Length: 454
Image (spheres, helix red, strand yellow):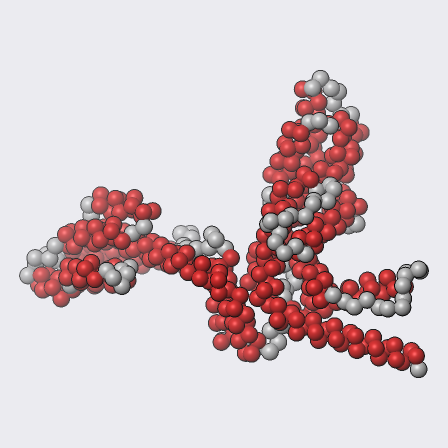
């Protein structure tokens, strides 16, 4: 429970600090759901009872008095420590003992109290609630006024929470690294296996690098006198690159990246779309580039069409082959339209069929164009991770990726920011894991060398 609480706090703090658009929203139950219908019935019954009590002869005010007592506490919660004058006024006007005495003598003014509450809410609310306050003032029915007062007070409470979040964000951003590292250390103390997935994630990159080094040493003509050591930075960067090809539906993320799981998944999904757009552009240029050369507006239009049709790529119901076929058909239509406008002959049926077929084959395993684009994007992302400040000095975009350069640079900066922050927070934990893995590897190598000599 302690570990879960620490993880929850750490996740919330991380989200507030790194997500400028983060804010809390009220949970809204669907009206068609059972819970939504039950809540509506219960609430409606309460307000119907209140209305019947106020319309009775003589009126019954006990429920209304309790509502004003609750309203008073909510209004007081909005006040800053220095708001003593308004605090005293609220307590004086909404004094439930006084209201109860007035009710006993049938002199209580529910409408007047409601008007005072609305006026006070107007002083305390954010500008975004001004229209809600005007609607409250225009409502004539007392029960409906009280009902809407609570609705607007709920909105104001959420406004206050989000204002507090915005106020805390600069402080959290300054303290985030130390805070997350401390919280994760507490989690590790409570849950000793909290780094198992992270260890496997890094170990996979270590094994891949060892295999690559082994192949290098076996290459004819390669220098075998000294075996190069594994670079911890290279191993860790390669581990981060794996996140761009991660199967977020089936594979569990490393524990140290759980707080950024949603962002990484969104980046990966967007990157897959960009890869497809780049592949389509390469195929189009190879097939009809000589015909459409010097028509930049056509390239922009084809890119926009591809992006629109690929928007549902990540839905389970999406059939990629059908989408690619549709893009191919639409590409042929746009190219022919442009050629006709220029007074040039349209593409013949064979070229169109070939173009659509190559588009549809992108999704096939080991497609050479997909493999080429993927390698170049990986190279670009890898070079980003080696830069101290990607925003100030972006690496050159490899050939074939010019069509997605702007989007790739934005996505690359977002990815590098996630990685750099993650390195700052979890660097000591990664260092311990790498130390165990790499030292263990070196010891094994020495043992193997010793045994082969003997």
